[in-house]
Each structure stands twice: as structure tokens, then as C-alpha cells.
Image (cartoon, rainbow, N blue to C red):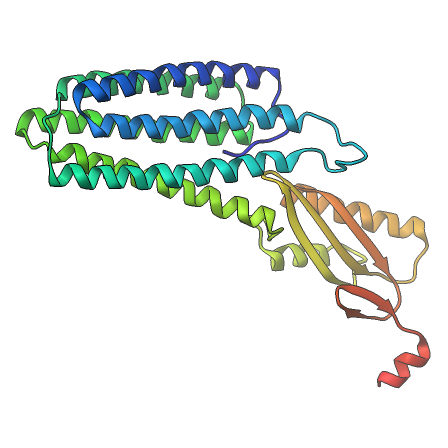
Length: 307
């Protein structure tokens, strides 16, 4: 889940309620899964455990990201949420492979499943996910909340599949359907976990933010009136929704008062079109060469020597 520092007290309350409801449903799934001998229900418990951890991550990140920067944490605590997401996603990969292993064992030795109980518990899950989705929808349009809302919609589809599977077992007495559902739920957990792992690793390795094209960003800067050239361009993520940029921009030899307008226009483009708010921009009005990421101004004598 993506966390945005703009989340307020209302968002924290919604997340706390969602955590309590999800934890209660996990307990119901575990008890019912054991009583019904349903691996699909136990797999769904694992899936909802991932939801619980993700919601908890969001709540912790909302708290951490509300803390101001300090002398030792000049960017604040945005990376805390990223590190928690990395740990969370890694544990989910382990859970998904455990589900695959158990489902494979069940395929070889099918066990009778109480399909009726499966359907009742899954039905309760649809209601629970619906309540959480409604709370998240009403709490606002913050990107963190929107992603959580989409997650709950996915959970509703998953529990709906368990209801359909329970009906199929009742109609056909084919108990392998329970294992097939478990494979599907495990694949859903693995798919979402790999996506989180890729994004968190990209952030920690200071890669270009997801969905951002460096050539488009450079072209947008070049279009600003007064910009002659852009180089040594770097863009990375501080947190999942907080991006930073540094670059060198060549401009004409003009007074600082005139260059201030160019700087303001560049920052406006970066913030409006690319949501980049942390910028370090160096202006140059002499011919230069780039060496190891550093711009070295060239004197007139050196310029003639190079030519």
C-alpha cells in the first residue's frame, strides 16, 4: 500500500477500525477453516493477514510521516514505511509458497470439506470487505486510501471465489476444488507481493520513480523559456509518494532576478506535471563538461585547447 503524508486524523481512525474488523475476521477464518477442513478458508486467512499487515503499515506510516524532519533525519521518516513494506512483502512471499505446498499435498490426498460453512464464512468476508471499502471511500481521495480501497475490492473478489467454490463442492462433491482455490489465492498473494517488492527495492536503490519517464521529464524542463540545456539529471523517491530531483541547467548570462523566474517556472512544471517537490537545481552560464557526475567549468584557454 502507498502512504501519503497528507493523511489526517480521520484517516487514522478509519485505518484503526479496519484493523480491528480485519483481525476479527482472520480469527473467524482460522477457526472455521480448521472446523470445515478447508484449506481455501485457511488460505483466505493468510490473504487477510496480508491485508492486516498492510493496513498496520499504513497506520504506522501515517504516524511516522507526520513527524517533522530533524537535524539527523533531514527528509523525515518517509523511508520507514518503505522498509516496513519490504519486510511485509517478503513475509507474504513465504506465506504464498506455504499455501502452494499445502494445496499440493491436499491435491494428492483430498479431504472432505464442509462446503456450507465455507460459504457462510466467505459471505461474512464479503460483508466485512464491503464495510471497510465504504469507510475508505468516504474518508477521502488520498492516494494511500485509494490503493487500500482497490485492495479491499480485490479481497471481495477473492472471498466471492470461495463462495463459488463452496457451491461447486456441494454440487459436485469434488473436494479438489478447495485446493484449486488455495492455489488461486496463493497466486494472488504472490503477485501482489512481488509488485510491492519491486517497488520498494526500486525506491531503496534510488531508481527512477515508477511511471516516471526521464526523457519526458527532461523534455518538459527544456521547454521552459530561458532553459538552454539540461544535464546531470537525477530523480529518485524518498518515500512511495515523495520524489526528489537534482540537475544542472544551462542558461544565458543574466542577472539573478531574471534567473529566479526560470527557477520558479521549472519548479512549477516539476510539481504540477510530475509531483516532484524536493529539487536541487544548479544554474550555469559558462560552457562546461561533465566528469563523474560533477560539472567542471572550463576557462576560455581550456576551451580553445579542446578544439
